[in-house]
Image (tube, rainbow, N blue to C red; front, side, top):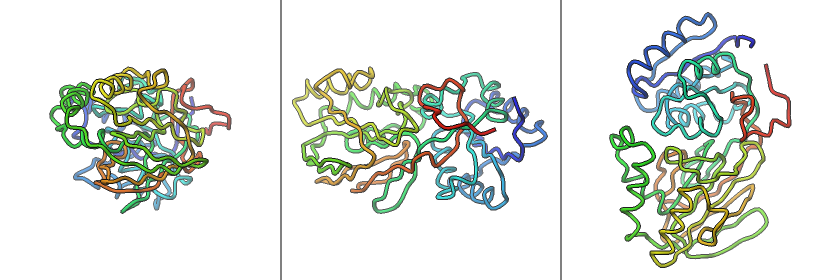
Length: 309
């Protein structure tokens, strides 16, 4: 494979195990065409990404979890076309890495990030009380509440099981939201507990919230858990956890290129696991705006346009 020139690796030193991080750092630091910067506090990854754009870096390597990736994405926004993004998955969830079919072996993932080819993917945008870009998924209502209650130490130890346990515990106290959705071709009103608006396939550390999603098709995959008796709601949540939401009447699924959400009361919204608070807002997609490194046979990318070298 060709060696990529002029790369910068932004490393979250708090992600992953110490031994794995040291091996990965050594591999990056010994590469002749890659600089390495470690983040020092929240927001630092976004600052480093902005400086990389200004310095003319051609490839950014995000070594961390989904939160680190999201920071870097918003750091380069809206200049997505000026740089390529690669990922070394070090977090507990690594949901975008799952969609991209990245290697689980850290040495292989690092090698792919340094030398792999990039393909275009969509960038999702949420505009509410603030604007936030994301690559993977957003969730509102029930999922937002669950995300608030999953503590970092539980995520580190249990991964997706922490979300499952929190979801089960929260079921009896689910809030009903009167939701108005304005999609590209239709509008609808309904009482709902939860809504997921996904670009990628996984959330919550491997939960298949949108098992058929494609990262470059210009469409969100949407899943809604309507308000229903507890037994039906539990069944809906179970179907989502199993990736069977398209096979049941307990979950409403659809696709759209844009979604405007209004609810009463306001829903807690998160994007790529980052809680934005209780807000209405609009989601849209910047079609194939960012080039990202993925495995050549990644099922989430159509690759109907040429890959870059």
